[in-house]
Image (tube, chains in turn blue, red):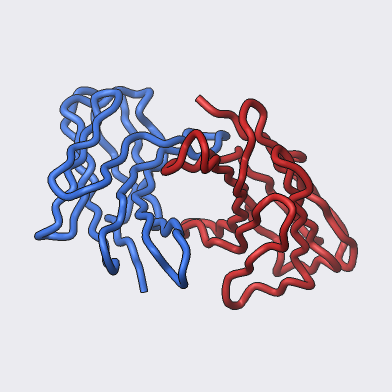
Length: 114
Length: 117
């Protein structure tokens, strides 16, 4: 079946540090890939997405490139801020059991300290 | 962006009682709604998918008689946990999608924390 594996957290960084959160996936066919962010006390929000190989999703300084050869969709940001502290979920959307279903990773908590 | 609300945000109930959780899409019509369950430090697990006016499709291992889902309109879906027990304590999250407007994107509610004593 489809699955998403992302690095365990928590990840603690100083402000302005470089961020990478690894994500790899297993899926049949050609999934769409997503990163969602969950700020404390709030629901999941779509951060960025990519729908085909070599696409780069970007938003709010975050980027992720759909790498089919390595089945990866790593999240990066060049300079994190305290306000980026949240839980980040990698996800894919693909056919499962005859209809489109979203499968999530376990989430990675990011804490940015001043 | 699209907004999805849930009510209540948290609920505490006694074992054996039933609890209803509402999920509303506030500024769009949701053709499909999803219910997830999230355990501490674990991923979101899809419980069921519902389309307006039709029966929900439950994932394998989810008891349909225990977790009743009703999608009565394009803006409202409810999840009723019947005869709740402590093992049902969890964080329940709904999500909505419009096949017309946001074909590839799901919007999530803030979640409902259920504690069964």
